[in-house]
Amino acid sequence: MGTARGTSTWRSDIAFALLAALLLLALNAHAGFPQLADPAGDNDSLLQLVEVRDLMAGQGWFDLHQYRMGLEGGFVMHWSRLLDAPLALAILAVSALTGSPALAEQIVQIAWPALQFWLAVFFIIRAARAFAGTHAVLPAVVVGGAALYYIGIFSPGSLDHHNVQLALTLASLALLLEAPTHRPAALVAGICATLTLAIGMESAPYAGTLGAVVALLFLGNGSGERLIARDFGLGVAAAAALVFAITVPVSSWGQAQCDTFSIVQFALAALAGAGLTVVASWKAANATLARRLISLGLLAAVLALVVVFLFPQCLAAPYARLDPRLQQMWLGHIEEAQSIFQLVFDDPVRAVARFATPLVAIIVMALHFSHGGWRRQDSLVGALLVVAFLVSAWEVRGSTFSIAFAVIPLSAWIAKWRQRAEASPSGGSVLRMAAAWLISVNAIWSGAAEAASSAFAIGAPPRDASIDSPCNSRGSFAVLGRMAPTTVLAISNLGSPILAFTGHRVFAGPYHRNVAGNLLALDALLGSAADAKAIIESHHVGLVALCRGNPESRLLTASAPDSFLAGVMRGSVPEWLEPVAEAHGAPLELYRVRSKG
Image 1 (cartoon, rainbow, N blue to C red):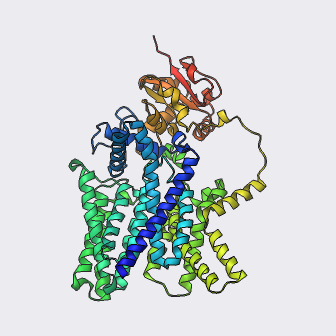
Image 2: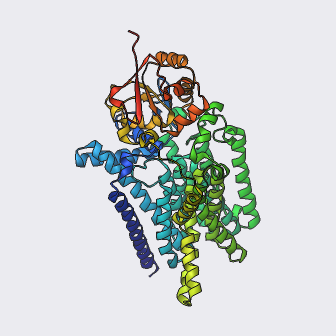
Image 3: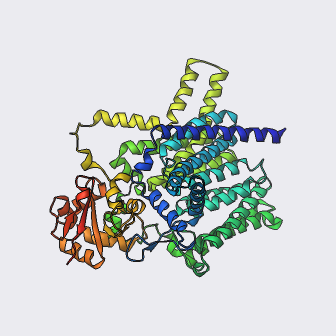
């Protein structure tokens, strides 16, 4: 009976998630999938597509160079082939069916994020069911679907790693919540936690938090959590070994890299996972609370010593060693890298939309904790939510995770008021239930903040849309795409779209490993016209691309009003540049470098 019921809930949860994903597809289809024609500055997804194309064109599995960005020879990206592989296979499979690689790309750009959305909603539903029972399923579908739609990482064209990482983290959480009643769940949870780490270091805090909570639950309840801890650790260690073997070439096994999966992450994950498995399996190490405390304490100490003595460079902030000029001119203006304090000052509407529901969820869980009855489910969900909120306070990108995690306690909160309204219907109970629904939806907070902001805003005169265009659309690069391949001097925000929509190469792109290319572009754009000419000639630049409406162009111009870029923005074009006639009047201005002859 239990197995049949479990299968039934899985089927219904799959159906609910599928319904949400189909609704998302329908909304995007009704709009005409505008994101495919206008990626809206999603540089990571565009460059991800470029890397997939490079892999399909024959670039080596272990060769992560981006040859068309940076100085001659390119630079090594820090992304994982674990994401390139399924995307490439999907495009090849659809190409074989349709006979059109271009159409296959578009289909995969639509289907891939929709698949991740479906998986994310499904695991939110499973987590909410395990956390608060059947009554939490409907709120999880509605609030979860709305939240994932709001954060925007599941839109058509979203091929970068963020949606996959979130789906895998939610999978690991849901499986750990179900682990006491589903034997293989903890093993798969460990695999998912390791995979999300291997795909990108942004999810390291969440994978680490899940591992720490599993260990602490085992510490407090040795007999009840022993098999879960053992299986989770085994999944982590096995997945870490497999990922290391298939994504890191033998020649690089000894190279420590802090921003991608390398010997650092493998050593820590394998040691932590294997150590937890041994402690949970060895009775002499886990028979009593004191022995578990000593064993797990020794494991934690070993992990700390490994980091401090073997990989101390990874204790620094992620961008601590980034060139100061790039920190000032680039990193400080990346929206997802802003702190909560900077966001509140620069964009209070977005701050409300990003932090309101996670904060409400934390308050709900704190009130629950104050009333007693804390459970293992609360430990897993609460720890992830608090860590994600703290990460988002440091860098806004963490709110992508905190908003999703917040759905689980908020769904339980709504379910509680639904049950009370059903048990004793009254105007007050219905109003409380309605308030819980409204407070839990991001779009409500976003709309309210936007309305409040508009009420106090001072009207501004309309501006020319062509001047304000940030040159995000595919159409902006049509003229450039028809020109013979060469090196293009442009701001970093244009780097990925130029690679994706044309056959040219660029110096700059918003990636922390492309230090030399980004600095060279800054030297050319922020130096004098003579400086720019010298760089252009020495590096064989054939075209200069300018987008007046891009915020980066305005930022650089304001920071260096006497620079080469500022001069061209004012219309003072050096004689060694000639405007490309076909691009006249377009948002993306093109200037051809005159040959010396």
